[in-house]
Image (cartoon, rainbow, N blue to C red; front, side):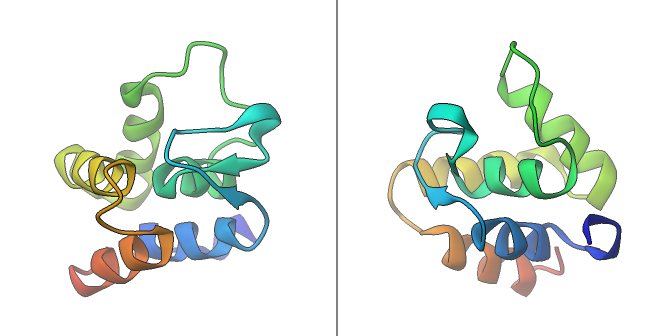
Amino acid sequence: MSDKIKTLSEAIRYGSMFIGETKIFFGDDYKCGCAIGTAYLAVINSNPSDAISPDSIFDPLAERFGVPKEVIADVSVSHFRGEMNRAECASWLESKGY
């Protein structure tokens, strides 16, 4: 399925069907994730490296979907601050063509 996902918003929506929501990249045992963490788990890697950092998550998503890292960072921060939930993050990205 992940090869059929063409946008970051689709990756968030797809991944959100399988794992719970948290405001940090990944929760315990990767059973929950933030908007960007959920997209990462859905299409990049189900087992992130031990050295989890914004760049190790943002770079592969930016490369795969052609989304500027700044946009990915903005979504991540907005979700972390509680300004948007994952569904709202996906809708906002979709409205921007991502």
